[in-house]
Amino acid sequence: MKKRLFVFITPDGVTYSSPDETYPDVENLQVLGFGEGSNEEEAFEDFIKNNKWVLETQFNEVICIEVKSRIYREKDFI
Image (cartoon, rainbow, N blue to C red; front, side, top):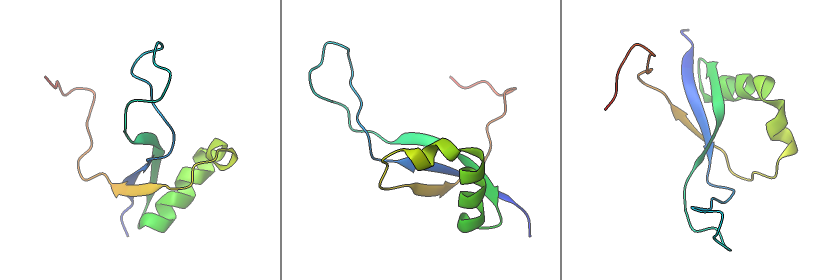
């Protein structure tokens, strides 16, 4: 079966809009990385193999989303 590309993101963690902010003030998702596989499980294994650092973090939730269309460097986006 053909390998598919997945992106792994998490809602865990915090973001500050400015160094002057005392408390996190932006709700967002953080991209952890990418993995390839014929399904989500294989892609997650590939992601972990190439991003072992994530096992040492305290992220509790990881979301897997299939990338349907890759963006290539030759494309211009405005």
